[in-house]
Image 1 (tube, rainbow, N blue to C red):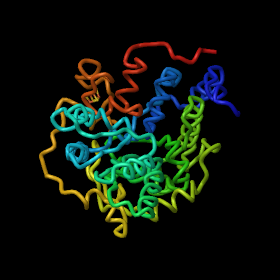
Image 2 (image 1 turned 90 degrees about the vertical axis):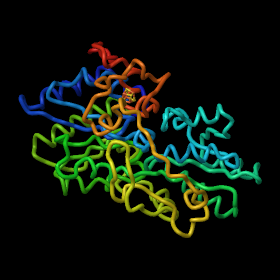
Image 3 (image 1 turned 45 degrees about the horizontal axis):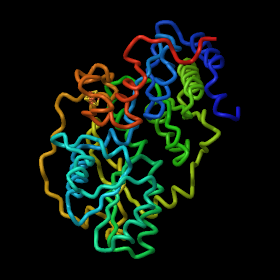
Image 4 (image 1 turned 180 degrees about the horizontal axis):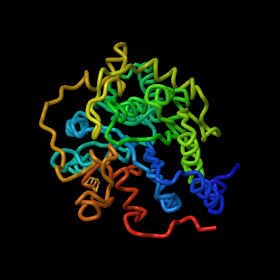
Length: 376
Ligand code: SF4
């Protein structure tokens, strides 16, 4: 297959779904986690759940970078944005995420804070050059996919000798989160993972080898199109039926075993592991996030600025932590739909285009509805 439409072919989707129906064993459950929010959205957008047998349950994972950022880190970014010396730059999704007390970067901007949305971290270089009397901070978030562009920004800022640019680093690591989900048996009783697409283009399929080896859990890396996801489910069902636990790569058109070596090298040159990092929903996970190497400490916003240690306050009624752990479905939250919606998000999972609550809401999957892929 070559063109995107071919990966959305309803007839082929029905054929793969039929194979899944044929291969599941009656009475056996197949509890599969799609780690990545991109897959969650594909699943709901194309109504894939409706094509699956009851034996297959899809559990939504924490693979949404905006969703897993703990509120304390967002509060630190808000504090930076309120500093009149600072121009705070970040990706658009972060602007609307509720911080303590229901504030957000967008509200800080409305109050006069200089908060700018970037499409590329490298745009921060121009902002720093154009504003030599201000401190420009890039609020960096994301999994391994968005880490290399931040690494490039760091490298270039260092080479240019910019003294008014720094990075507030919140980059997190997918395999560490998967370990966190499985540690001590995990509460979810998972049978396998649909592995991330974009992340895997960077880290490669070899990065998941520990999961079959240590936990006997298969991982099938899948692209973001509906046929990719269905094919990955079929491969997982086959592995489980045959008692195998392996890493398989369905997304061979973009993912190699070793990933993007250039991006990985650049990332390793500028970042090092944090001892531990707090994740929303998953708690503190060892070696699960990156910080700047000591030789680049002069570009680290956490070294350059002093932060007050205020008390962070989550909205107690928001079930994002349970949704991110796969323990609750979004519509089980009392706030879902009313008052929490994409127009009025009360939790991070409703903000991001990769958030599970936004997926449920946007595609109406909490109501009974026909699948979008026409039945063949
Ligand atoms: Fe949080 Fe809103 Fe999702 Fe409830 S519906 S878990 S408040 S984001």
